[in-house]
Length: 521
Image 1 (tube, rainbow, N blue to C red):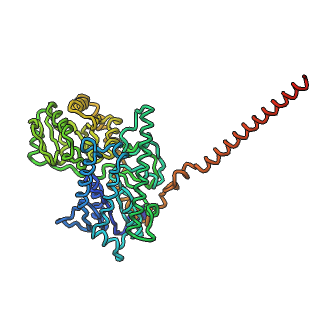
Image 2 (image 1 turned 135 degrees about the vertical axis):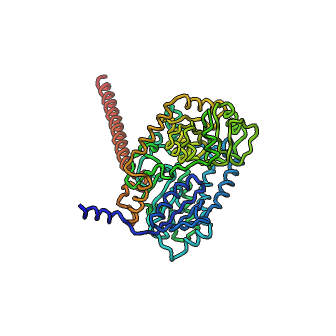
Image 3 (image 1 turned 30 degrees about the vertical axis):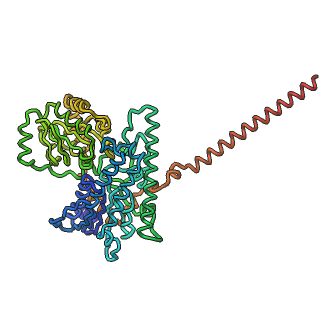
């Protein structure tokens, strides 16, 4: 027995490895997820070099962790948002819904953000340093140009999404689950309880999203050619280095999608132990006689760009509600704010939600905020504005843990009614506690699962043994359109032959009938 245990321990261990992390998206809500894993890997003895927009080692060195700071990307994304607003591509100043995405070129801003990383001097130095060696690349699952690091260092790649996955990412991994209503794109605004006309519209949006993806891939191929010259790999070439996909969500939030073992769900990976609240904030919460509603629209919604009527809708709703309000709002100076509202530029959201006096969380529907609310057992009012937020808030309604307010048409009375609906019915809090119990009932914590699979890839130099046969397979081949085309052609040929035969027989009988009539005459 001891020999068996010893053997298993030997198999499960891995030598310290050099790992490159590439996380170019300038969004702290994305970066906290990646940071959680990279810090844990460094803590376990692996040496990491991480390209990030939010370095943690400034003035605070961490063993085994070197960071390349590309935080200048935040200036670019702010400029892009302002440009989109000036071009009337954002509704009510800050809202980018599915219609905005498919009818504007604003999505190309994502490509320019990714391209911006390669202009960084330290990144360029790393790319051309022949002495560098890495055993693994962990890359953000957003676009593809940064997958070039897998090619440069001849290392397997783990794609890592701080959200669920784009449909195209599932295609790469061989999880051929494209269905506009069962497994919709996370950027769609509505996908259930649809009329026939709404279904047609949503299928059109799904098609447009796919077209945008292919357009972006062409831009990426051009960029690779410009960076690396003749012989540059294509995006399809780079995809061959991908071994696994990590998703920072729970299967239930991904409609329990059937996936190969190369796709690993890590929902709530970023959650840290709850800490004590600052003294003044704790006193405020303890002393509230009416209960407190916490309001935060996340880090990617820029209040300074919000149109006045939308800001006023929030302000007037909070004035009406008979609760104390903690409102995270930065970059805006509001006048005539009612006495029950306390505004700050930042709150310790994770810790705040665990205070027993928090009755409700009004949120934009970001996935990290959603995880924190579920963990704290706080029901939700979702007001989606960007990206995957509509998808997440749709899940609130489907799972009975919250309600949705339409940000495109929201007035003060709409928000007031939504708050009253949730707080007047205990089932929302009961449902979110049940959901937490179901989601957390797993044999491994998400961090342990993430580390184990990362080291599995390191132990075996990749994870091609887990790859689905459908990985990177064109959908024409997956659905056997060549065979279907042949069968259809054969059926059409048989049908045409039959019709022609019937026509000839009819003509023959008609001719014989005329001959017989002539003979009788």
